[in-house]
Image (cartoon, rainbow, N blue to C red; front, side, top):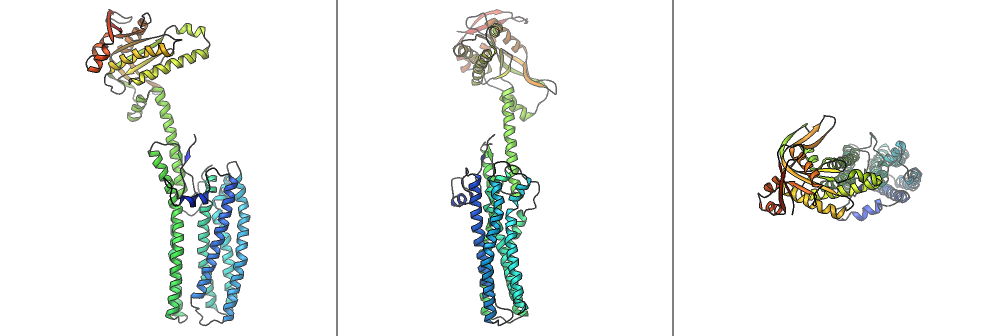
Length: 529
């Protein structure tokens, strides 16, 4: 069964401010794998390059505004540090982009392939943001160690200052790279996870992302302030002006970076929850052909996959319920689902309509089987439609005959009136719409047992009692009449109780009394006027 995917992150029911950004990042629903891979590669390359350049500028700013714990440092050493730092950034950024491009070659081949990805290939895509982050973390680590080694011969505390500044800046930058890569690769990951969810991945989930956002948005800047305060007390005297400038720089950076990191982590959790919410809204409206994209393999991805399994189960349940209703009747299926099934029955006042084809044996002998089947289907289509329009349901098909019931398993007002009107209209429609067949109709009413008959392994809902036998005998008798419709006279009296029933009863005329085959009491016959 084909399903409609619910819109992903940032989508709104009737559009919204984030939809252009989402279209830019994820593309259009019908994009090919090549376009998806090309867009992801370009966006990730640009985003990671800008993140690293921004992180490098922030680290450089901190080295300038944070007071030197060693006191006065020569201009020559400052110049050497700036030159080394700038040269490393100029060399490291292209290297990082080159390594990322090499990594994306495998991702591109995976996204562009038409077959379902295997376990190893899914793992490659799922761990792509972490691996990309590890590449940049390695470059930041090399730069940090090198910077420390250059300054260590001149001043240990100065080397510690530059090392901590570069380390904290690198951790924050690499985390931003991870969040950006995870979001920009979401379309490709969604395509890979459509084939199946891995049981366990070890990827950072909701708790890890929340703690990471707190650590980078709150803990790192506060740690920097604590280190600055301790350094001013224990190592060197720092003027109030220098301390205030450093606090403003750290605080401003914490506000900006903390907001970005927290928002990215929050959107990574909110987007899949929003997609599930939209999916539940569609299920609540009765639309079961819905499926949400699975964004990752963490708890939120498992939530989306669980929703898809639930929707698939609901579709299967609805399909089985529909088939069950077609087999036994909608009312019987509804009662069975609501109350359960017990063998046995209950006494009910019902009206019964029995319709049988005249000369069915000869019909099967004179025509090909395919033509006979088509005629029978046309015949039963009229029977089902007519009986249903008057509130009854088909209890069973018996080869060339059908038994319709009014008043079971659910109560129905005016069962006699409905059965009389249905039988009269049925005879007219059969003559008009299926002229190749001739059929007779019998109608009766009375007390019968309605319930599930059979064994625990196989049973059916049916109606057993004198009205069923009487309707079948009236059908046999009606085959020899011109109208081909006969009803028990007791129905006319029962229908005439209310105004609507009197109008229907006026359309019938009572005839003679006869004792039908297999019965001991006489039956007053009634036929349409």
